[in-house]
Length: 319
Ligand SMILES: Cc1cc2nc3c(=O)[nH]c(=O)nc-3n(C[C@H](O)[C@H](O)[C@H](O)COP(=O)(O)O)c2cc1C
Image 1 (cartoon, protein in one colour):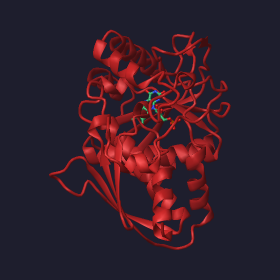
Image 2: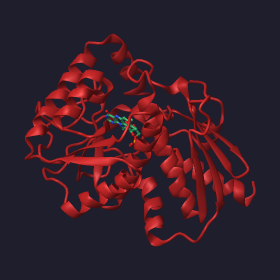
Image 3: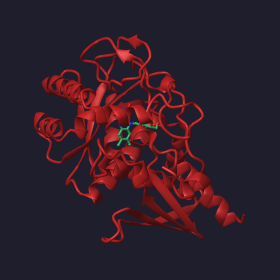
Image 4: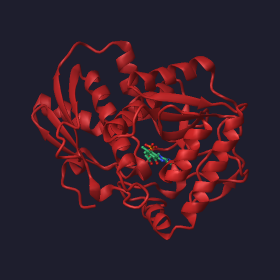
């Protein structure tokens, strides 16, 4: 393996630690010299909960942001063409790695955060984020062309959001296909390289207005905080390009959060159901299309979910 190959392998591995819906890692990678081709993998798409591939492309966008960021650590610039072929909607991006300047400290800090970031599904401290930290996280999302709108504990619309979350989860729990999809990707065998193992699902909340998602397979229960910051990430439009952009913005925001020791977890069932998604947009008077709903706060450091290796990502998917 020559120097270029080693760097590209490192970048692909770092990119693959991106967050993805149910840790499906719905991406496939082709490497040719210093060109990395990122494709969405329909065999890993949630056909029922995500029929249009919105969450699949958000996940791929997070992969793309990690690739861009990891490239800088190796003094490379990622020159990216997003969705370059209108006839091939699974071709998410062509990433050309070119020699660049030595990374500055901000770039290094961001790339180091890739390996530290992990979703935390345990109770957070019962406090909102510090304002300056929230501003830094919002600025990161804005830099990628998305908007991160916080929902603070004192805001009346927060209760509407929590009610919509519970409604969407109740509807999904009555839907056999949604239940089967969740079961296929959660409480997974610890030896598997994808899915979420049971010990990382977190306890189920005893308080009905907890700002966390309910999983069928959660073990144990706990009282969750009420006063962590919630936030919704939205994009100007709702096209495939917006979904990739949402993923890039999500990962940029999460890496900045990681730098400040802020953890996140997500509750996206409400955005998988078109009616509750519409109602959430109206409840918050959002200009754009909501793509991710999360809580942000302070907790102990979570364990990492498993990942496929760089060579598994570059091999053809076996579903
Ligand atoms: C589009 C998308 C939707 C997600 N929805 C949820 C969710 O509803 N609940 C949750 O706990 N995590 C959710 N996640 C987080 C993933 O489960 C998590 O990223 C994945 O299991 C990998 O774990 P890690 O983030 O700790 O690396 C979502 C992530 C993405 C990208």
